[in-house]
Image (cartoon, rainbow, N blue to C red; front, side, top):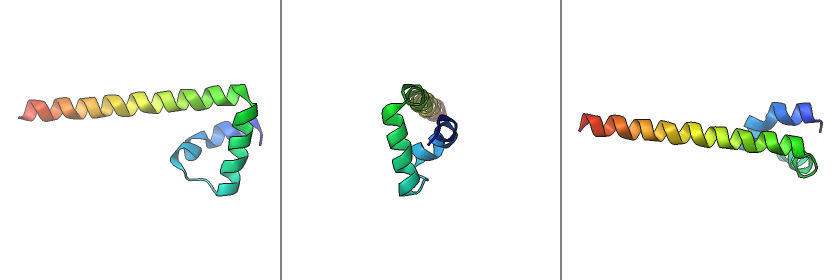
Length: 66
């Protein structure tokens, strides 16, 4: 799998939306490609920050309503 293909499919990979064979190809590529592995880590960190701030905002809104 190429870097372009891997990066294009990173979100679906993280969501578990890929077939087992494509997921295996991406895993193999990520094991050998430091650049794509950095993209994966950046995507994970971005999603973590987004969902963490979304939960915090929801909790703040709930506490203001109380």
